[in-house]
Length: 185
Image 1: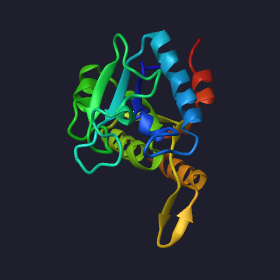
Image 2: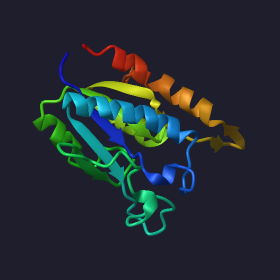
Image 3: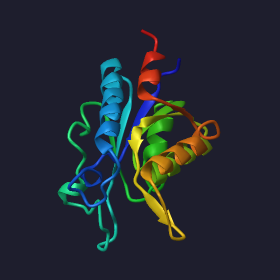
Image 4: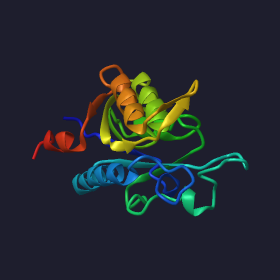
């Protein structure tokens, strides 16, 4: 197995209760992402922490300098972690992420974070298009309910639809537990 790199995307305070863009059950997703993060750090495998900061003064969340834009407790970069600031849903767009991964010789990415239907989806597709092997930890991601054409789509259905669309074509979607159990001891 080639050494994977963990990409933790946008686990930030605005997505949690009290934030301005609360997701459905972000704590459960964060707990799974944190388990993966701790495993990577124990193995001393590469970790990239991605943080979204809004560019627009009219943004309703991830406004620079606010508590909501801060990384959620336990997801602050440590030691050898790479910290990437992004301004768009795609973590590769106008960032150093591709360069960092290429220079490290990375071939396999393990992705987790928030929001499944936005930043996780676009970043996973971009990673696949760039030629990376991608594992997406589906239960280490979270989303929210959406609406379109007068119809509401519950968060659980949004989550299932996006994970189903990514699985097989752009990533291998796995639970955190199943992925961790597949690691060599």
